[in-house]
Structure formats: structure tokens, C-alpha cells
Image 1 (cartoon, rainbow, N blue to C red):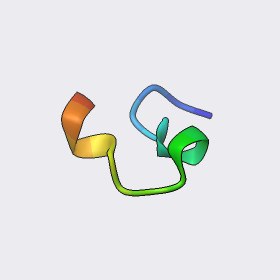
Image 2 (image 1 turned 90 degrees about the vertical axis):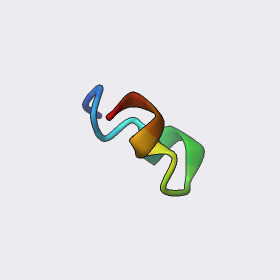
Image 3 (image 1 turned 45 degrees about the horizontal axis):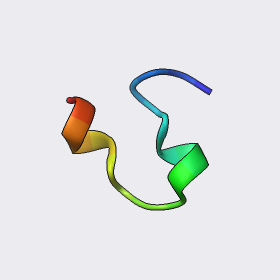
Image 4 (image 1 turned 180 degrees about the vertical axis):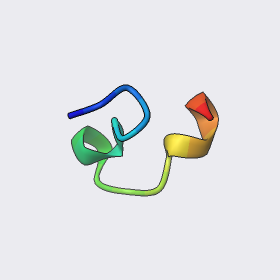
Length: 19
């Protein structure tokens, strides 16, 4: 839902890539 919480599309903790 958010650019920081885009992991909701992936389904895993890939958010650090955009951190």
C-alpha cells in the first residue's frame, strides 16, 4: 500500500531494498 511497505505485493521482507 505504501512505497515503504511495497512488500505487500511481493509477500516477503524485500522492503530493505527500498529502505
